[in-house]
Length: 179
Image (cartoon, rainbow, N blue to C red; front, top):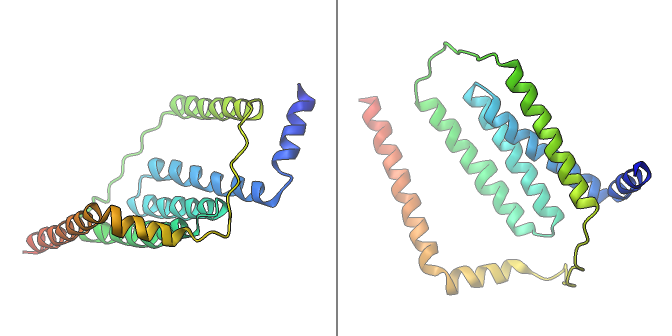
């Protein structure tokens, strides 16, 4: 049993792509956990930005460069900046209360380790079907553009109108607070 586990771990870390996947996955999980556990809002936003950037790294490993670029441009850039502006425009109390629940922290940690152990065991000892061959040099950006502007043009335009209305609403609310 222990020999199979060692063989599985050595196979897992045998290629640089698997090692980078592990690093990006840990950064994504860690950033998400920190985003929900920090008490200061600016620290939460930075944690979310780390999560977004590590997800973009995972997309690059999956040969989805366009999706990775959009992830960086939209989420890591625009959404993080929007959240920082929201933090700067709102009032925050300087008094922070920190709840101390050591039993809760320990149980959460034990549960997380158990979950990852079960997932690791399930992935190592399951059989996956062979992946269908695809051409990694294929330009999927053109296909995405054709889908967006041919078949899904109405939802795309409705989303742009919705985002514009939300942006104008945010400006109006910010002006009201100022007055």
